[in-house]
Figure 1 (cartoon, rainbow over the protein chains, first blue to last red):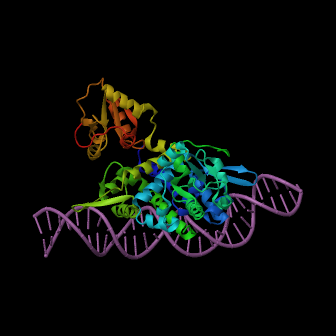
Figure 2: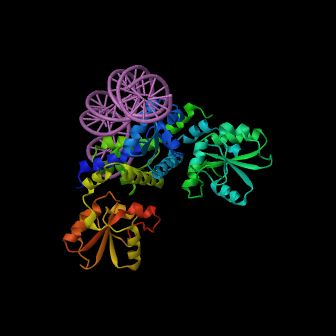
Figure 3: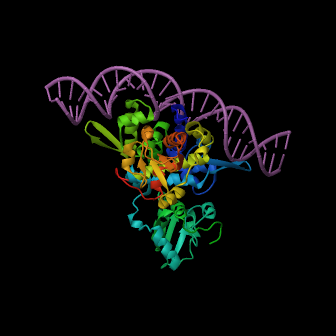
Length: 222
Length: 222
DNA sequence: CCAATACTCAAGTAGTAGTTTGAATATTGA
DNA sequence: TCAATATTCAAACTACTACTTGAGTATTGG
């Protein structure tokens, strides 16, 4: 008891969890799976990698314990082993945002300048939802909306935003998506503004809303 | 904006944080530094590695943003960049405890069987501290006690436990140390029981107490 | 300025990780 | 049973990581 070899083995096992998230592509995989389960092919498409390579990463992560699988016909569907993995990913992102030099420049390069989009805080959105004077749009893919969304949000995937008709021009809109580093809501806000709507984006996304313990709705309905 | 190269770079940057904790020895370094700042030599001794190798790890972690340094005479003192790093380490450990196959066996191999030590929960310790009917012993090294401890705990490093005299045999004792995977408190409880005291250990340790938002005392005093 | 102390750097080795390519396996629906 | 689809496996390559050894650098106290 208490010897070096045993301590090494134990801490190596802890480190396995960090290893499971220690490549950019694996971090992206977690970021996708936080939104709900996905097949290998879908994940490969999201992270722009070959199916074989994606499969390799997924297996490694499953071996480390952070992912679970389930078969659905010919497909294998991967999901996070638990919400705690999402918490850890959030902690990791926060640490990076606070301490990694140059992360802001990298984020800007990816998401572009957001200051014009007037991000709305969770707190503010919550208040205005209660007041009922805004329309909230969930611009993620429909499956992610169905897996869970902010109450009373309408599902309008960014790819189908053009078809949106039934909104008065003076309605205020808040769009949200996967999180602070997701560009769907930015794209949606820019598009809506070009068409004359008063649109803003939520400063983060659905997972943060859920993690904060705010109410959510599961399924297709409102 | 929103292109692949930029997204890769951003997520690679997030992954740097995980990489900083993705070896067992680095995880141990974080586990030590959660207790307070340390010099390179002290850390090397704690993790049983050469000073050169330890220095290498420390620099890499500092480069990744999770550690900060400060010079003190001829020594370089490393510390966590912020408490959020400790939160992330805790999340990692929890995920491992929940999901990594075999972690319990590894933990048992290192800490031994704990069931006989009758671990006391934070909640219970809090209540009994208020009632004032127990003695709490901080069995970590003295510097760690001074960096912060549970109010009214007495500093009795496990190495000096033999000298402990001034306790009535019928006093109930709760010992605590660095956390659930630290063996100082186990060692202390076993030793105290051999000498006829009624001793138990806190189920986790000081960092968890602090993280839970419970009151702490900083400095040498009670 | 010198010696002692504490830490970092550089080079080398052995082992591991990420990606690609092409073949192999498992399940479904006909 | 057979073809089609979805996923995994195996091999190979490149690049990186952990650790060791020995030399180099910076600060302190005399």
